[in-house]
Length: 288
Image (cartoon, rainbow, N blue to C red):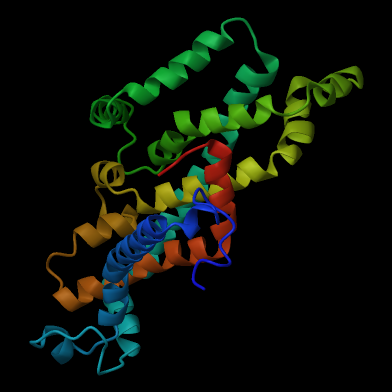
């Protein structure tokens, strides 16, 4: 009965009539379920532990399901750490990063995919080759340039960093390549300029890829730690992730509650845009 309604996937209904295939399929399902449990348990433990009172949090043996329920502790920690300021800083970085990711990567992809000026293939090949450069090497040179142009404690380098993302550019180019050229030619015949074709023709037709880029850029900007840690030195400009790293002087239960605050936005984002993210992975042809 367990296998009767299965009519999709790489294991067909005919294969499942064999005993050894049924055993293999059951093993894969159990293994996948265990992996899911292992992935879900850490954030679930953080969420549940953030609701325990201090005595239960430090109690031995530790409890997984809280015996006490203290939602007011979230408000106490929020005010004690002053998270409002750091969340606003993170939202500024996230908003600017999303705008830069869509604008600069989209325009570069428009140039190499639609306009195709002389040398565009060389430019695109260089963009692809940039993905081969180790992140640590590029980060060192990028940080030196940021220091030289005196942009420490500024959000601009973080925003522009997402605006020069090779993967986003490739994703945009793949999508633009699939747009029928007849639309572009018709717009040119009607007298549209190159910029107007991008803003009035290409952009409205790119809602799917724009949604994907927005989700990926938003998630990357929110969870980024190393570069903001290097650039944002002043206390009043730190993002949530940087502040979380500097909370070593706070009690452990305060740090766990702070972790809860950082987990909530990505969970809400995934819950709302789950379908778009899956479509985006299919669109980019990415696995893993």
